[in-house]
Image (cartoon, rainbow, N blue to C red):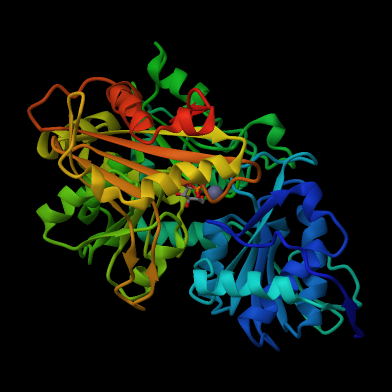
Length: 544
Ligand code: G1P
Ligand code: ZN
C-alpha cells in the first residue's frame, strides 16, 4: 500500500472547542482541511502504528465522505485496524463503549451533535482517547498547535471500504471491521437495568411512552432496545431513521426544539413519559405528564434512587455536575454522604473522576447525563434509568420529581442564551465581569442581595491540572445563583450563556416552570453584566 505525503499549509481556525472541532460543512469541505486536522491530531497524540481505532458518525451530511478521508489518513499514519459502525453510523455513547470494549487506542466521532445538518449546516470531529472519553484539553490544545505548524499530511492509496457489509475486510494494509452499531450498546444497557421489570411496565397496557429519534442517530438504538428488547408498543419510537439533514428537525432535546413532545405531555391525551435524544445520541430530555424534568433535577433524582437500579445497587462513590448545572444534586450527595464535584462545562472534565472511580453519576444542565458505564454522556441510558425508576418505585415521573422537591427543595433553573453577532463585544462582557468579580460581594441591587461572586477555576483532583476562567458565578443571599460564560460550540458569532438558578425551600410553593420562576433573576443578571449596553443586543435569543 503506497503512502504519500502531501504538502499542505496550515489553516488558522482549527482550535477544538467544548466538544471537538465544529465548523460549517463548507469549511470542512475545503481541500486539505479535514486531512490537516486529522494529521494534526495524529501528530499531537503520538504513535498510532498498528493501533486499533473506532470510527463512526451521526449520519449527518458528509458523514461518508469524511470517513473515507479518515480511513486514508489513518492508514497513512500506520493505524492497523478501524472498527466502524455499519453504514458509517455510531452514536457518541456507543462509540465510547466500543473503544472500551475493544481496548482501542481511541476513536473519531464525526458529529456536530445537535447543530443543524445538511450542506449548509455544520460538521464536526471529536476524538476520543483510550478510556473512551473525549481528548483532554492538553491534547486538543496540542492538536491545535500542531495544526498551526503542519507542512504535510500522510495518506494511503487504498480501495474504498464497504461500510454496508458487516465483518472484516482488508483495505490495503488497514483492516476494517464493520460492526452492528447497536448490538454491543444494547447488551450494555441490558446489563445495567432491570429489563424484565421495565418490560412489565411497558407491557401493562396502561403505561404510554414516546421516544423521538428526531431523525438522528438514536432511532435505531431506541427501536432495538425499547420496541424489540423491552416490548414497547410499535410506534413508541418515532422519527427513527437517521437522515443527513435530520429531515429538517433540529435534533436538540429541549423544550423549545422538541416542543411537540411537551405539547403532547401537557395536552389532554398526555402519556406517561416522553423522551428525546440529540444528533449524536448523548443528550436526553425527559418529560413527565405536565412537566419537563430539568436536567439538574433529573441528575439529582437519579442519584437519590440509584440503588434501586441493578447497575448501581452497590451505591455511588460520588457524583459530579458541571459548574453551571443546578446544585440540586449537591443536596442529595450531602444526604447520601458522598462527594459531589463541580467541574467546568464539557464532558471531558468528568472523565478523570470516572476513571479514578471517584464518581459514578454525572450531569450537565445542557440535557446531558451519564455514568461510569461510558466516558460520554448518554441519552438512551438516561431514558432507561427513568423507566427503571418508575418501574421499581411505582411512582410516575412527575411524582418522583415532586417527592424530590418536597424533601430537598426545588432548584428552579433556566438558561438565557444571548446571541451576540460580534464576538469581540461578547468577549468584553465576560472580561468586564471577570476583571474583579469580588467587587460585587455584599452588594444589594434592587431587592437582590449578592453574597459573593467569583471567576470559576477548576483544580482537577486526579491529575492536578487547573482550568481557570471557566465562567463567573454570582451567589445570592436567598440560595439562588447566576452564572455567566461564553459558549464554546458555536460556529458563528458568540453566545453568552446566562444560567439562572432560583432556590425554593421544601415547604415553598413549587409551582411554575423553570423559565417562569427565574424570569426576574434573568433581568437582574443581564443588568448586572450590562449585556445590552455593551453589545447592543436587546434580549436573549433563546430561553431554555
Ligand atoms: C454545550 C453545553 C455543554 C456541552 C457541550 C457539548 O457547550 O453547554 O454542557 O458539554 O455543548 O454537548 P457550550 O456551547 O456551552 O460550550
Ligand atoms: Zn450531542
